[in-house]
Picture 1 (cartoon, rainbow, N blue to C red):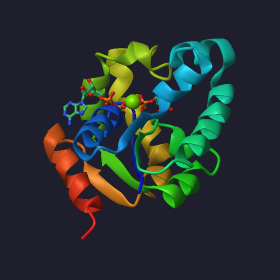
Picture 2: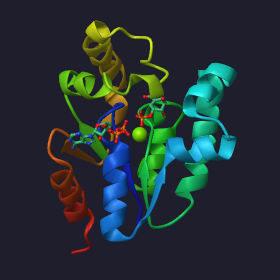
Picture 3: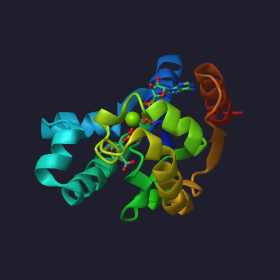
Picture 4: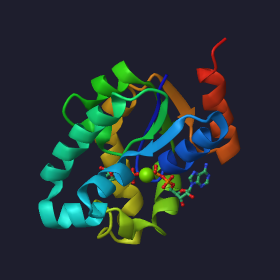
Length: 170
Ligand SMILES: Nc1ncnc2c1ncn2[C@@H]1O[C@H](COP(=O)(O)OP(=O)(O)O)[C@@H](O)[C@H]1O
Ligand SMILES: O=C(O)C1=C[C@@H](OP(=O)(O)O)[C@@H](O)[C@H](O)C1
Ligand SMILES: [Mg+2]
């Protein structure tokens, strides 16, 4: 069984995925880290040197590669479910969870971490919440296709336990 985590940048996918892996023993893969290591470039470098279209193509390629494995926790990028037929691949090959947070909470978290995220690195802090709200509005039809929706505005152990409880064989 595979678990995948989807949701907007900053919702906690990478943090929660690692914790689930530590507790369950499932292998942890963060799609962004996997892409960076395969391409030998940071996500920022891929966007600036090769462009977003190239990034989306390899993101799809590596998504397929990873989801052919078994027993993994996969933290996706915020845009992964939105492109190509990636959401179908994700739902066919894993149990998907959408970590849902308000634009306000996401903006608060992301202000400190914008520079690692090329799509928001040049947005002024005072415009970030509105940018996120519009961006989520476009992406929501994909996010809501996750099998389960989780309130991401809870502490890490609570979210981790909720996901583990749902996926535990009964
Ligand atoms: N449940 C949580 N409560 C508070 N802060 C969190 C929580 N989950 C993650 N964070 C923090 O939010 C930021 C973004 O988390 P990250 O796991 O990188 O998100 P994503 O991979 O979805 O972009 C990090 O600083 C992380 O420590
Ligand atoms: O939302 C997006 O389109 C992106 C989210 C990022 O991942 P995180 O959600 O882990 O920040 C990363 O894949 C890239 O910067 C694009
Ligand atoms: Mg991440």
